[in-house]
Structure formats: structure tokens, C-alpha cells
Length: 180
Image (cartoon, rainbow, N blue to C red):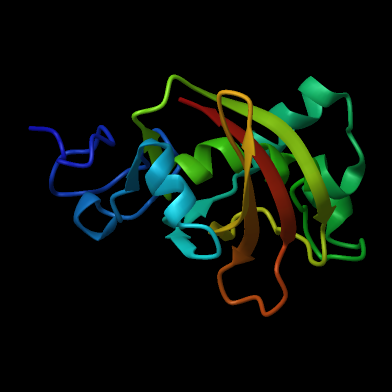
């Protein structure tokens, strides 16, 4: 039997979903569905919600290091990182940022459009680290919505939180184009 959230976990929970969430399916939030460009326009300036918590693993960090060729010890060497500035390994800032699409998909689903284009970023900051083994989630708000040929361009304000950490790990403005 599969969970109603479609996360591949049995209804009893346990394990990790394909999105990295360790919460049982019955505790996971369903993504908000936004149907069509008119609903997108109506949401300007509103909070969209937050993703479930997901654990950042050393394996993820190591794979990201391999892909980006960034093997700095604070990311990939747990023994050496113990004596470093963070006391353990931390995720790359760009690993956190690269989770934007999948984590935003856990917050909101845009339907009734022909295409969604990741158009870029306006502003990105990494105020605090994401220690390996900690829980991360993203909170999203829809900022400005601007008319463009064939659809709208939106700015989604993303705030990445580490469970139990006061300062956000990342704040970013993601620019998307949604075409009708």
C-alpha cells in the first residue's frame, strides 16, 4: 500500500521519501496547488507555505562535491572538519540553493500552465551553515508578479531554515516564468 502523498512510503511511515523527507506520510504537508495564471496573479505578496523537513546527509554533500569539484575539507572530511570553524562538515551553500526546485515543488504546484521556466535569481545570501545531519526546510512567499509575453514572471522569496537554528541558512529570490 502506498501513501496518499505519493512519496513512495507505506502508510506506516519509516524510511526516507524520494524527496528526502523523514516525516511519516501522514505528517507531511501536501503541496498547495495553484491553477492557472489568474490564481498566480491573485497570490502576489502572499506566503505559499513551507516544505517538510529533510535531512542533509554526508552522502549528498560528497556527491555534490564530486559534481562541482569542490572538495573543501569543511564539506567532505568529517575528521578534519571537527577542528574547523563549524565543528563538523557542512553542506555547500550552492547545494542548499540547488534544492530550490525540488523543495519548492513540495510547497506549491503550478498547474493549468503550459510551461514553467527557471529564469534565474535576483539575490542570494548564505547567513548561516547547514550542518550535515541536520533538518532543512524552505519557506516560500510569492513576491512580485509581472506580465510578460505569454504569461507572468514571478519572484519567489525563499528562506531556508535549519531546525533549531535561529539564522536562516539561505535567503534567495528565485525568478520563474509561467507561461499560459
